[in-house]
Length: 394
Image (cartoon, rainbow, N blue to C red):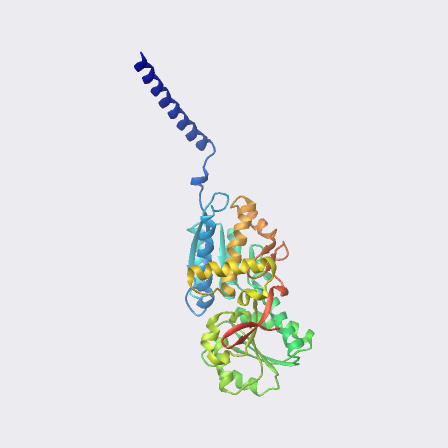
């Protein structure tokens, strides 16, 4: 009798267990998906991992991979892991457009982080706007957020407008010069900076006595600098990204020019110092606080120091400003996804526009419907190169 009771008890427990299993499956089925099998959010990115702008794009690529790894390790966004698909535009705007088309049409991404340089960031705008998904640009050219189509694009680099004003303040208030020369790249970044100087310099009492231009790939600027040397300019502003500005510094030294060299935020990387060598000494430029972490205070200091520690542990080197732009792009996007609770393009764009007080590497971000730049002049500091190192210029 006891034997039969034991057999019946075992059968009852087995049937109960099967019943529970069935109920669990039904619950998962009725809700559509479980936390474990939610579809990943596909994020596209276009960076200049190779080509002349690779000193900017490679740290961005490293950072995007690092931050996505950290976000996924922490559980993703509302249970969705991030799937990052990175394309290399080889520092060429045409390649950037092809890459963005592939990300949108084939990979079906819900947002695109693009791009490293201003020409690429501007070139991809129409494709991304057509798809009605957000674009996070990591470049500084003013037309990125000011010219149509602009409804879908946000910027994480400091705008040229902010950087130019910072330089003008330094020239007029600290150097106390009245006459300046400008040497700029012919690309969109150089043009944007030059246009802004022409607009803002007269308001500060600065006279632009000459503007010279160079092609991005030029390897000698002696001709342009010789013309500048023949003027009464008291300081030279060089607006471009490497290698051009580094070559200009070397040519200035060869020509015996001693007027101050003030660069753009496009040289905020060690490559400028490596390429210019001794000619980099004394060069001053505006940049984010990540280059001199002691210039950051409070919560931003904590964010910068944590990022620097994580980046160095992974890549055995310190991050630069451009790595910071990528950190801000992916984390602002992640925060907006969390708040929107959906990958819908319009709702995601609206959530990014509501970003307020986001403590990033580049600055404290405050976006709105009419402000897709996010940061201001207080987010930048003037940096001087001394003995091959970055020092805050006070």
